[in-house]
Length: 267
Image (cartoon, rainbow, N blue to C red; front, side, top):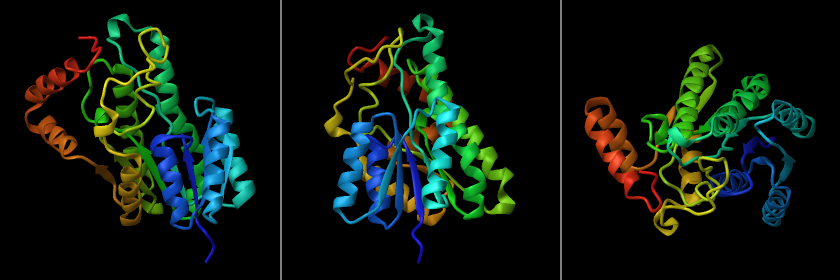
């Protein structure tokens, strides 16, 4: 049978890299998109050493033209797209009062518009292949987190967009999965923007105690196979979503206390 094709943004590290390895292991041709060419080259070599197929395309998802070319080049090389995984993302950590507006704009441009751009140009091919679109989101898309106004806003926007997209394409049987990992060991907190838009360069969490990217990739792949609509991956996340429905005031207090305890917290 002809191999299926999975396109993964933000594939150079963390969850994106783990997803690339997982889908390649499951006999997909994988297309890796990110800005870090050296990391992409190394990942392609790692995948090819396992007798699996991968290519990379340097892409800045914040630029619409890059996303358009990403889809065009993928189709030119493989002729189709079966799975689009909108994983590229960035975080921020600062109170809104002191945060420069362009920080919020940058987070929205990468997290939300990057997913919109890629989905826009890939959609006809995915509908044609009766494929899947996977959006890597967060519990921050269910309840706003203090100190992450831009990040939470981008994830709320993603949820609304992909839920609407799913409903618009019921007749096409388009599979849209919104996946919400818990805190995962990755570079996202080191690269998170501060109030001035610079990378904070350190994580406020003990990364060794967090979910591992490989574990997240397995859960997402299983959700893809089962055609799940949404996945919340941790017990803490599931409790948070439940509390948001029935006891929102209590949840707000719990979230604030948790964030306040983080090293270097802005509160």
